[in-house]
Length: 299
Image (cartoon, rainbow, N blue to C red; front, side, top):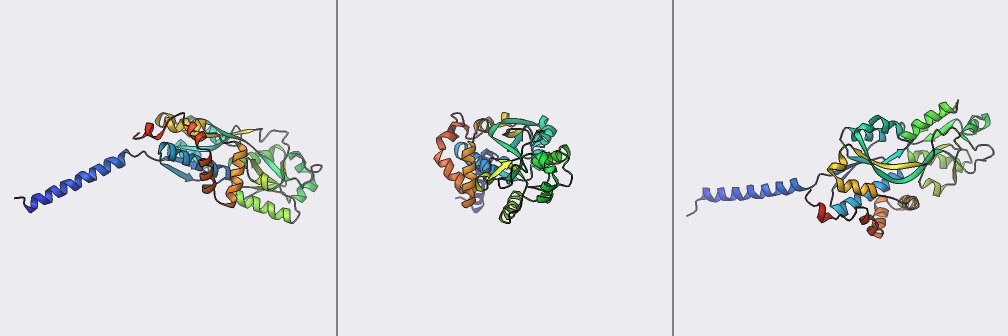
């Protein structure tokens, strides 16, 4: 006859076996890919598209980490995040990239863009066409000596500091807030028929909402066309070749990106990304080079 103690023992052993199986199954789950991002309108779309594709195609967990771009570069170099798909090169993020490049690897270009100082087209081009024109006393007065910008210390902020020195823009100061804060102030000025000077970048929905134009940059402080790269910590491609292959092939047509950004303002980034991904799933599947979840399961 089975004694109470033996029944208890068998029950305990069964529980232990179940717990061990649970732990083994949990251990086999892939660790999340940690993707760093900054709350810029284009990046909000790009990271969510990547998140959706990786989860759907590879069953790969993803953790999105929000922080300023300088912190993202440092965290990536230290191995605390895996990649950031928003590195603007060769100019905007050059100082960050050069500082940490020995600890980084470039996964590929997602799309192209441009940065620079911009004004509403209601500002007469005869009075303000170039950054050099900012030195005209009457222009400085109409702008109240303000250069509206997003957060302090990002790549464009640093380039504008350089532009102030290169063009000797005495009497100007940057007024930093956030992307939405900068654009809200410009919108208020437009309604009051006041001039505004902003740090702009494209692709961005601001160019669809307001008629804007870049100022000429004869000293090429901001450079020409920029490329937006996905950059990872050193060794990432060897550890996650399937994810690296996806980012090498991950391309977003600029026209699509600008429409997604504009549509997201009326709903949400999550909603427009889900709809766009569903409508373009074969194109995203091809970005994995023929790999599927069954190929990479259990890695």
